[in-house]
Length: 134
Image (tube, rainbow, N blue to C red):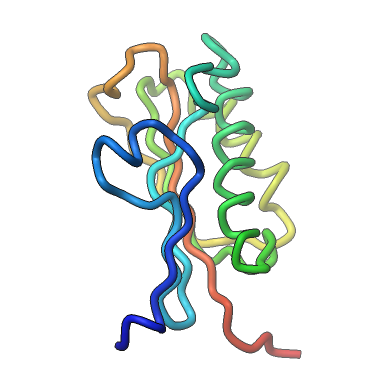
């Protein structure tokens, strides 16, 4: 794969610079979005509310694939990381509201925690930008 086939976009997260990563990377027909939380800049949206955090995180991830001209219809996989098992239903509700019509392959994991203890949800998204079957 040549370097021209890979494109990276940043979202402005301060961690992108300090850790050296891109919000999203397109390589060939795939676009992958890095772990995304409900932080926008220094502000955490939906503090204490897993449903709101999931909506914000997925919104940011969808904005990232939008940089490549894609929308939710191109999403083929999501990964959801939760700090607490108790939040499965609320985060699942947010996922269904956004992705019910496209039904991506989805993995949900409960993890020990996140760098910031106020974060309840982190998401990853993968999209396909190839030809759409009719």
